Length: 186
Image: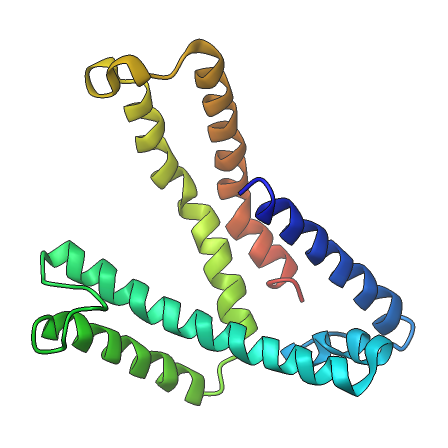
């Protein structure tokens, strides 16, 4: 976590910087995943482009599988069904059926031609709007000595937690109006 998040952030900034240097002067506006690869293809040639395409395919395929598994686990755990990727479909039929149905729903949405970037942007905005609803219960429980015992938040951690809550509350309140004002980044 101490290496992955900062490294991911630095790499994201590097990609955005390279894209700005290469694409903006050419008047290219990135509207698809394929256009993200253009700066690297220009810098590294065909071999790097092939490696990047394989990486994108692996990443998107992995994300689709992860999302499908997540949906199966979430629904199965909520309803108390038998679940697990190492259980045979006959042992956990509802879990496996849920994953298949979620995968088919995803394919159906994809087949409609809806812009997946727009769906992602909308999902992120609504996730930001809901974040205080998920964080507040954690903050309350972490300050409950009856539940946390000796691990209850101290004064400094509590101040930091409350400051963070205020920050995400501001972001949540601003998320939907900003989405509307900017036309979802358009």
